[in-house]
Length: 235
Length: 235
DNA sequence: CGCTGCGTTGAATCCTATCAACGCTCGTGG
DNA sequence: CCACGAGCGTTGATAGGATTCAACGCAGCG
Image 1 (spheres, each protein chain N blue to C red):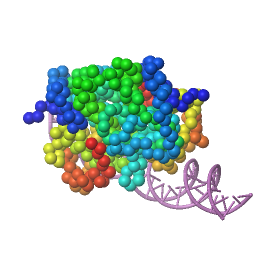
Image 2 (image 1 turned 90 degrees about the vertical axis):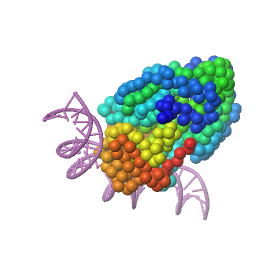
Image 3 (image 1 turned 135 degrees about the horizontal axis):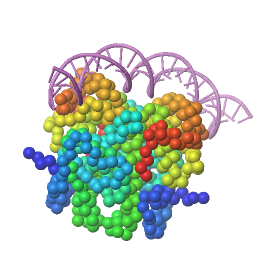
Image 4 (image 1 turned 180 degrees about the vertical axis):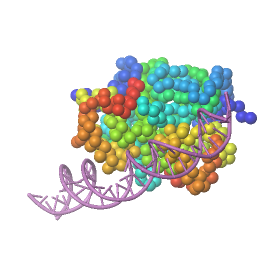
C-alpha cells in the first residue's frame, strides 16, 4: 500500500529532481500530521495562519456571499498547499474547509529549504516554485470554465482536471477514480444550481462520455472529452 | 508630474518597507524599458519567457477557445508582473497581450534580491511575496464574480476592483479614473456578451451608482456599491 | 419508524445570448 | 472637401440555457 504521505513527494518530484535529503524531509512531514473531520475550517481569509499541507482527503477554498450564494474557488487534493506558502506575515487570501475527513501537516519544514537561498535544497525550492505556477494555472482554467463554457463543458472540463491532478498523485485507477463530492458541491464549484448539475450529469452519461455515480467517476472517452472542452494542459 | 515608473514602487511600498537600495533598484528598472503598441503579445502560455514588469499602460492575461470564445483572466495595470516571477525554467501559464500602448521592463533585477536568501533586500523579498498573494486573491475574486454574481453585480464589482487597484498606484483622481477599455473587452472579462454589457452599463448609470463613458469612470456611491456586491478587500 | 441527506423530476420563469440593424465618430483617400 | 469604411456604442426582437419552486424516491441511521 502506498503510504499516505507520498502525494506531496509524487507531485513535487514531477517538477524537479529531489535529492535524498529533500525527499526525506518530505517523508517526515506526517510526523506533525493532524486529523480533521468533515467540514473543518483549515484557514480563514483575512487571518494570518501558518503554512499547512493537505496529506489526505479533499478540501476546498471557497467563499460565501452574504445572501448565501457560495462559490468554490479551488479543490485541494492530497499534496496541495493550504493557503499561501511563504514567509510573509500577511493575511491569507483564502478560506479553506475540508470536504471529507482529512489529514493535514505543518508545512513549516518546507520553508527551511529557502534558508540558505536554496543552495542546500535546490530541487525542493524550484519544485515549490513550479507547483505555485501550476496551481495558479488551475485557477485560471477555472476562470475560463466559469466565464465562457456551458454547463456541459464545465462539468466535463472539471472531470478532466480531477483526472489529471489525481493521476499525478497516483489516485487514478486506469480510467476511473473516487470522487467523494455531492452534486451540491459540484454546483458550487461550477457556478450552477444543483438541479442543473443533476440534469447535465445525466446528459453526459447518456452521451457516453463518462459515468459519475456512487462516489466514483469513470471516463469513457477521454480524447473526445478533451477536444470538446478545448483541454490544454501545460504540465 | 509623477514619473511613470513609480507604479511598482508605490505598490510594493505598501506591502513592506523598502530600503533606499531597494527603492533605487526599482527606480532603475525603466532603464531596460521597451515600448509596445496595442495588441502586442507579451507572453505566451506554454512558453518559457523571462520575467517582465508592466510599467505603463493596460494589458491582460486571456485565453481564446478554439471556437473563438474569449475569456480575460486578469487585467494587468502598471506595476504588475507579466507572467510568473521566479527562477523556475518552466513554461508560463498565461498569455498576456497589451490593451493599450504599453511600457514594459525586464524584471530580472528583482530576482537578484533573492541572491543571498533575501538578507540584503528583505523588504523587496517580502513585498514580492505579498504581491503574489494579493494578485492571487484578485484571481479568486474574479472566480466568485463569474461563478455566483449577476451581470449587474459583476460590472459593479469589477469597477470597484479597478478603483482599488488604481488607487494603490495613484491613478485615481478623487472618485474617478481613466478606463481605456471597450465594452467588448469588458464583456470578455465578465463572461458576458457585448450587448448585455451595454445594457447593464445603462442600468447602472440610471441607478446612479457610477458613470462610465468616454474612457472615464466615476463612482458616485462607493459604499452602496460595496455592500451591493459583497465587497471584501483584504489589503 | 420517522428523520435527514442526497439524488431526481416537472413546470414555470428569468436572465442572458443571439441576430440584425442603425448611428456616430474618426481617419483616410479620392 | 466630401465620400467611404472601420470601430464602437446602441437598440429591438427572439431564442435559449439555467434557475427557481415544489415535490418525490431512496438509503442510512438513531
